Amino acid sequence: MNGIINVIKPPLITSFRVVELIKRKFRLRHIGHLGVLDPIATGLLQIAVGSATKMFDYFTSLDRAYRVELLLGIATDTQDSAGKPVKISEEVSLKGLEEVINSFKGEIIQIPPMYSTLHYQGKRLYELAREGIEVPRQPRKVLIKSIDILETRDGKYPRVILDVVCQRGAYIRTLCNDIGEKLGVGGHMASLIRTRIGSIDLTKAYPLTEILEKGSSITDYFMPWILLDELKKVELIVKKQRDNFIKGKPVQLFRALSSKKEFVSVWYGGVCIGVGKVSQDVLSPIASERVNVD
Image 1 (tube, one colour):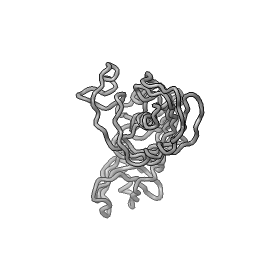
Image 2 (cartoon, helix red, strand yellow; image 1 turned 120 degrees about the horizontal axis):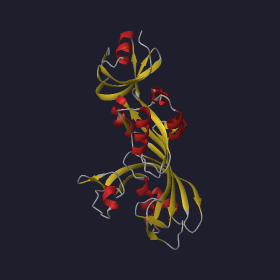
Image 3 (cartoon, helix red, strand yellow; image 1 turned 90 degrees about the vertical axis):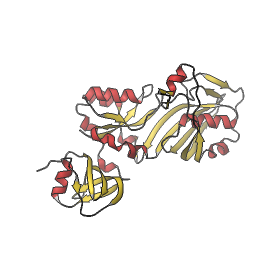
Image 4 (tube, helix red, strand yellow; image 1 turned 30 degrees about the vertical axis):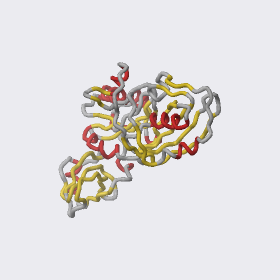
């Protein structure tokens, strides 16, 4: 069994716990997530089963879209609503908000938060943070492709609803913290929903509760490979090529397609039958749709 499951993760559960629950429910061996979501966050979490785990690099290279709620006036040690306040402003103004937010578009520098899964000398940063230990973190470049203000909500501590599109490696919590710092009032991420990865959005995902309570076979929740419309298409010409692909055997193509290894969607007779990786004129299968070989 090889495939991708698009899960709607509920809040207050780790991505690793989601993987463990699905693994136990369906008695799976090879399974993993394709990009972590913070425990307080909800939304799209992609889970790879079997050989589909080989597509980690592809899925993590795709743009990610988020709906985020920024609360201004209170900064926390975790940079989200789960943390303890470390700064509270008595007066909070939204003056200059749009200008400040626009300054975070494009390539920016972030310092990863202490409460993260990054490693430092063999331990995860969040483990050190829970012990009250703070260590130096290397600033790094991240790309914020777009950030749009959808709504502002007045109050003693105003809230700002944002849509953010970014690439892998960007911390939305840190983005919220840094916006608050630049405004001079502090801020933190009050809530977060991942709404899209590449072209896959929440309409193509299943709630975790449905999978765990109603699911009888994990294959019922596998994403059709045709949805990966960003992939280059490889059309197989003869039936023997199709049969070898479905059996998991390397397929000899009639011409070289790529000088480097590249993920592709695989088609036969106008139908998408799976995904693979092509190098020169050899196609290596990764996963196929359930197609009979006769």
